[in-house]
Length: 401
Image (cartoon, rainbow, N blue to C red; front, side, top):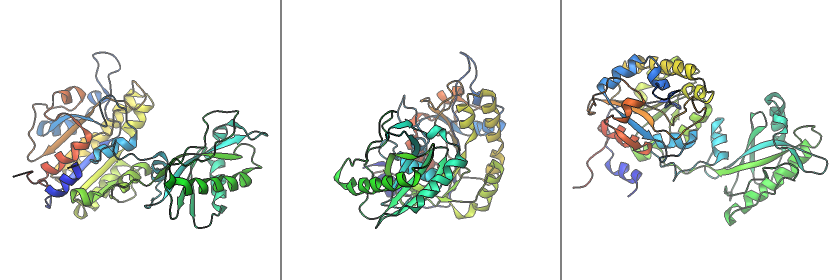
């Protein structure tokens, strides 16, 4: 029996409310041996007060030693095995800009490139063409027509754009056309299985028409296609947990990831304060709330320890607004670690704090990497966090006789 079969069988309906506050890239490292991490350096009185009432530990986003991207990191938090449910790059890029993929769609991440007079690639990214130049070129490709296929072309940023093919008989196993080298021509889109033959043919025709449309451009006179991907087949939160779920996020990618697991995207907040207002407004309509905060990740990727500390303090400041609503279960965690020391996502387990009326509090009265190592939750794979959330909310029945 897989985990979701178990949650379906043991699910209990009640009025409990679960809040999962995700500080993206929350985990960190000290700048020097024996020092404190960003979370430990930050002044976090609200998290520390919760730590005194709750139980903490370290979540492993995928497997020990694996540094995840945002997709696998969040799927784990949502209770989906990130190794079993992989989201292809094209689908992630499409959902990341807020495009709502339908079953049977195939999304492709495309890069503008420069071809020389011989048809070889001289620049794989068209000189990193600025967005204000590339977006109109991407939009110009909307005039491409292929019988029986609906085509969507959406600009992303700089040299990147997304193409989504919609029609019968499409599958996402097609090889990239980017040869990952200059001085050679683009590759042809080749199917990797029989089911993807039609997709490859559609892509080939799209490329043929695109070359004609772009032929007079000096920089972006062609494009490559990468990461062909169908919409992942993910059962919804309602199906597997019996939860009406809401996502309160600012960035499109995280809205897209939440949408893939059947969450409703609520409000249009642009700040953490506005996210708290949305939470209060929709409190009565949902059972589960995913709140995403980006800036603990982006400051870590910038290698800016002091700024990540400030952003961690900002995250802490929203907790009184959440507590005022009296959630049955409150979880504070991250989808992965992004230490400023490394300026990148890392494999380090993520500090995770759970507070409920029936949790078993551990002795800690502060929240950080060092206390989490010896916290009552121990170290666990992130995909099991939702089981803990459901049980602490009284939404899981007994297994077996």
